[in-house]
Length: 463
Ligand SMILES: [Zn+2]
Ligand SMILES: [Zn+2]
Image: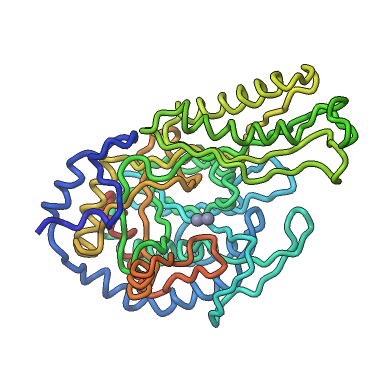
């Protein structure tokens, strides 16, 4: 029977969709991989751990912290790893804003000669008021950087990732006689704001600590059933850039447009013209998105304002596509302002954020293929599938140093299979990541995450 490699609707790797096709070896590895063979030692170890892991997860879930403020989460994570025998360094991470402390954690375990393998979890939560109604739901409220009171929730499941990492850490420490090399476990702050990975690298992650031969991560995903994982060889998540556009005009009375240069009309033209960059300038075989997520201008019915401000998010897989989109946004915006007759000193200001920017997450095909084989062995063929790339983003790709270090991130299923099937039947989607209703099933999601990541690490480090 052929392996269930892709879930319904997933993009097949041989379809010509503009991103690099995965090696056919990926499939072969799975076809020839051993059939479901539970690893009794891992399962036995997990039986002893799972109770406390679920308790840890619920505790973390009830106490989320926003990006740049992960102080207690990081301290708890560091303390746990130190108690397991890891050499732990805290407060790794340098942000551009001096008032932000880098709450990154680096835990190292040296165990003889062998490869250095990095595993990453993120630590932060989101400004969302939880509405799951769970007994361990977050009731945390805090003030954001703008001074507004916001609810805080682990709505992206980074608490699942932290707990999984603690399980992996303990089992790797217990199984020290089965592997060799240097294990580097990192807790990364500020993933949601996509500036935490950069902050850790800037603070010497690869200089002060062993530079890894491989870097691995997982992310929970409500599109897959709990107990299930999915690998995406090649481009898996898109690059992201935040862009601010200030469209300047010449304000005046709403009754006298001839005496003004209306930035509202110009902004409307810009919003529409930006859509033609993707549809008319970009190859349809190269996925790309330009979304104007915010538009603000003016104060009253009868006043032509001086300016309108737009906020954009720009997504792509290939670096050359990303550069082309960013250049086109500036050209189109400035060109339309010229056409509107705006003087040069009132040209639009287009600013691409340097901090809210991340490259695509590219899963090294050879590494992904190798680990897929290990995951099939550990979890059974029926529980490992191939996922499709998405236009969501992550800053994990930065740890590859522009593809110099093979990296891969796999999806960890988090939904009750019955509810997932129901949602597919009714066409009503499961609460997504970043939803106030997102509620991953703790068990067996945690067990599967620990088993999968431990198997992946052992595959790279086994004696
Ligand atoms: Zn997220
Ligand atoms: Zn996330």
